[in-house]
Every structure is written in structure tokens, then in C-alpha cells.
Amino acid sequence: MEFEELQAAWGTMNEELKKQKKLTDKIIMDMTKQKYKNKYSTAKTLESLASIVCFVMGFYVIVNFGKLDIWYLQVLGIFTILFYTVFPILSLNALFRLNNLDLSQDYGALMVDFNKRKKWFLLVQQLSIALCFVLVIAALPVIVKISDGKDMLLDSGTWLWYMPLAMIFLVFFTRWGYRCYKNMTNSAERILTDLE
Amino acid sequence: MNLKQKEVVFVKLIKEHEGLIFKASTIYTNNTQDQKDLFQEIVYQLWKSFDSFKNNSKISTWMYRVAMNTAITQLKKRKRSPIAEPIEKIVLKQIDTNDSSFEEKLRKVYQHINQLNVLEKGIMLLLLEGKNYEEISEISGLTSTNVGTRINRIKKKLKSQIIKNK
Image 1 (tube, rainbow over the protein chains, first blue to last red):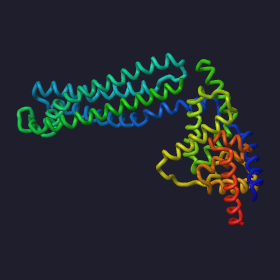
Image 2: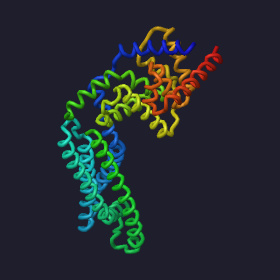
Image 3: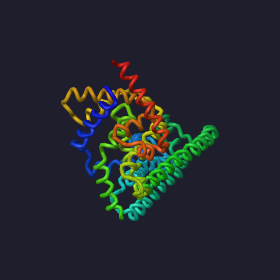
Image 4: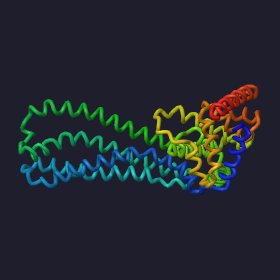
């Protein structure tokens, strides 16, 4: 096969390709928009998994709520249940709202809409981070009471090692998590800017 | 031009040149998924740089340049080595032909292209597309003399491959 033959075969392939147009208007614009959606796919998976864990924990506390026989344990129990059930819903909702942004609207409206959704998403994350610190204090006595029947609030020894460790872990983990979410929304914003 | 008008013009352009993007994405990849990803990335990069196209050059020249730059950048980024799938299979999937002698010829074309390095692949693509030295030079950023030298080298390489395969 000489170079001219290669060129002839290539020419035939060109003719075949011309006959078989496979792209539609929708597919073409979806290709550019899909890039925006892909930015959130990892976050969606992680948030969904975390939500399942939270719901299971919330359900566990609800089912065993009767074991919380002292008023302050009941208050902590209610807070734990609310946190485990309300925040995953809020967080998932904020993420889905960000993900389902209508990319066909005109650019000005799109950016206003995006910024509104981004602000709400980050606010929910900030709020859940702040309440996470409360949860660390609230959930442990509840879980210990349900599983071991002990009132941990009366045992100051455990708090001495538990609190510093939990706080250090939380500070690093929440800072890392929040930074990831911020990078993700910033990167999605850059894609939207490119769409202009 | 507002966003809607821009979209209409862009979509028309991509439809007219989808073969070009398909061929560029095919010669640089070795499985269907990577080819689809690269095709999508090229369309996205074309959209991104659509405003910067100033009509100073032919639209196809601009598209080849963006396609080749995107392909080379993607190749640099890609660290994983996926299971290789013969490239002609990807092409044949797209064009659904029943002509076995044509399939055989196409297989040979892609076998030869696969032996070339990244830059040579791009030049070979342009050469097969019937571009002259000046056009190849404009798209690749190489000087015409350099293009000439490289084309001679590619032709020699192909000749030795053809002799080896006989």
C-alpha cells in the first residue's frame, strides 16, 4: 500500500463520514454543558453516601429514644435526631439545586442564578460545620447511653481525652471538606464564565 | 451576537465539521471511551475559543489547530493506560460499512498512523486531509521547511513499514 493508496482510503472514509452525520443540535450543546454537570458528580456521590449514614444514625436514635431516661439526654437526643435527618436533606437539596442549574437561560440571568445557588450551598455547608462541633458533644452521650446504658456526662475522665481529640479531628476535616466544596464551586463558576 | 445566536452558529459549524473532529479524536486515542471523551473536550474547547476566532484564517484551519492542541494536551494529562482497542474498530463502529475490502484498507491506514509519534500523527492527518505545506505550517506552528522535512521523514517511515508488512 503506497501513500497515494492510503490517501484514497482516507478519502473514501471521508465520504462515508459525510453521509453519516450523527450529531444533533442537542448533543452538541449537551457536550459543553455536560462538563459543568461533571463537576458535581463526585460531590453528589459523597453527599449521598454521607446522607445514608446520617439517616441510619438518626433512625437508630429514634428507635432507641426510650432508653434516654434523663431530660438532658432527651434534649441531646432530639438535637442528634434533627441534625442527622434535617441537614442531609438540606445539603443534598442545595447540591441538587446547584447541579440542576438551567444552562439555557441568558448569561446574565445564569450567573445571578448560579451565584444565588452557590451562596445557599456554601451557607448550608458552613452551618452544618458549625453544628458538627455541637454534634460531637451531643451525640456521644446519646450513643453511649443507648448502647451501654451509661450516663457519660457524669464521667469526666472520658471527656478529657475525647474532646481534644474530636475537636482536632473536626477542625482539620471540616477545613479540608469546606475547601474542597469551595474549589468545586469555583471551578464550576470558571466553566460558566467560559460559556459566555 | 447574543448567546442564542452564538449557539446556533456554533452548532451549525460543528455539524458541518463533525468528521474533522471525529478523525482528530480517533487518531490520538486507542479506545472508544477515550475517543468520545476527546471528541467532547474538543467541542468544549472550540466553544471556549469561539470568540477568539477572528476570520483571519479559514474556519477549518482554526478547528484543526484547536483539535490538535486539545488532543496533545489531553495526551499529556492522561496518565492511565487503558486497554487498547484497535483504532479501526472505533472508526468502523462510526461508519457502519459492509465493504470488507474498504475495511481492510482502513485497517492498514490506521495501523500505519499508529506507528507515528504524536506530532507526526497530526501532520499525517493534515496530509491525508489534502492540506498543503503552508496550511500544515499554519495549523501546526512549524515552519514550512520543517513541515517538508517531517513529511519526508513520515513518508520514509511509512515506506519502511509497508515493505516490512509485505
